[in-house]
Image 1 (tube, one colour):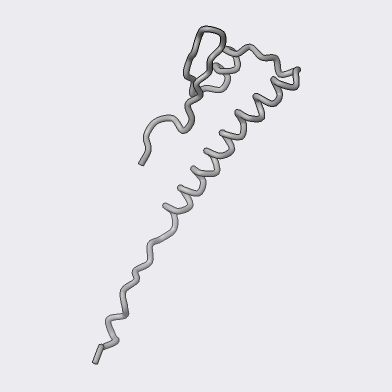
Image 2: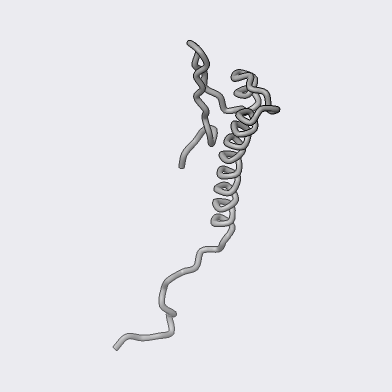
Length: 80
């Protein structure tokens, strides 16, 4: 099982590069206004990762909630 944050973003701006797990801090670092088309696309792109990790977590929790079924033959049947 993988441990740690679900997504790590590495961003290079000018001569600086930083890694982020928080999208708000990443957006503050790049300083691209959401009122521009590029700013909107960046935010949509970041949201796509959040949607993916949430759906993966939901699938994982659903799989853990399902009871395991045994694949053994009933004990009443005898083989010749």
